[in-house]
Each structure stands twice: as C-alpha cells, then as structure tokens.
Amino acid sequence: MREVPRGQWVTGEAVWYGELYHGRRTTSGEQFDMRLLSGSHTTIPFGERVEVVNPANGNSVVIVINDRSHLDRGLDLAISKAAAEQLGLAGQRRFAINYIWLE
Image (tube, rainbow, N blue to C red; front, top):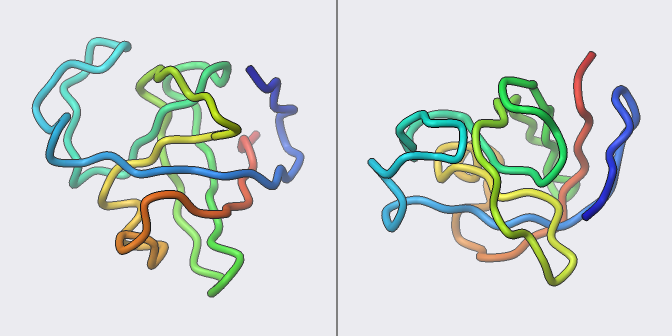
C-alpha cells in the first residue's frame, strides 16, 4: 500500500477496468459505470479527485476515487475504461502514469 501525499505528483503504474465490472457496486456503494471518469486507489478517500496524465502523449483526465481494489504487483491506480480512452491507453492493459491527488 502506497501513501500518496496530497498535491504532489507521483509516478506509477495503472490498469483499467470496464465491461467485467460495469453495473456492479463499488466499495463506496456507487454503481460502477465504465463510461464515467472514476478510479480505485488503496488509500485516497472516496470522492477525492485525482488528475492522471499519460506521460507518453501528455493527455490528462481528472477522475473521482469511488472504489478500493486490491492493487498489488506495483500498481497504483485502477481507472475506468472512459478514463483510459481519454488518456489514449485503452489498448494497453498495464501502463505508466503520473498522478496527483488534487487539493
């Protein structure tokens, strides 16, 4: 589990999730919608906004943390399919990202 300081950029790795979880309840109780800009982190509180950047192309997106997943194997975030598409990462399963917990 990686503690993330608010307001400081972090370099990490992420995955996206979509169809398999679409319509299921998230840990926060919301229904997961792969078309919304949301994500999962182990320590950032629900409802917090996180900016995620694809360092390969500079695309960025702001997601809302609404889930907890068992991120392991060095992963920092799991993001919705919509977020991965906006970042240009939907064709990859695991990818490098930069992210910041917004103030």
